[in-house]
Length: 236
Image (cartoon, rainbow, N blue to C red; front, top):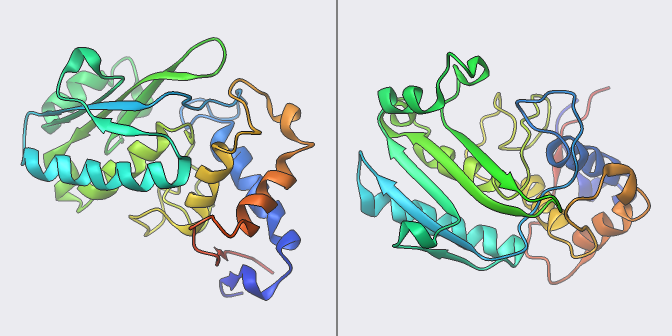
């Protein structure tokens, strides 16, 4: 069947899709497939320092600033460009392909051998993300026409949406998809993650009783600027 709009159905019929998408993206990590983890999210502002060892530093900062604005809109977390490395809690590196593969050490981390760009996060014992790193091989990403989408996807994933799901649609978290910008579904997932009712460190079973209320709040909230149409892939 063709893609369908949520507007064609009562919201509750599609809320299970959103719930399942949130569970798969927020409670798993793409490199620990099948191992459920607790919820991770930031509770403090992000101070982002940029290393531009290759490419155009002004372009890098522009792309990052644009994504910071989008993420702040959908999470309400303040984000700043930080000129001093020692004051930053997010480090974004633009490097060449050789440096990238040296940095990720594919001998010890073979699961990263096909990565176009990557991230890592550090969370405390309470599930609060306290530091993050993003590595982008500028020359390799440009050769695939994916420099901007690398910035968008990795910056979104360090927010706590850490998993890639091959059959999730429409989403930038699907490596097989054509999307290079955040989709309406991706933005809903950000809103859900940063709803104040979902505390860092909780397990999935801890939020089952409130997750539908959170989803409906985010979908129905007139102050939620996320697009009100979700195009969800359905199969007969």
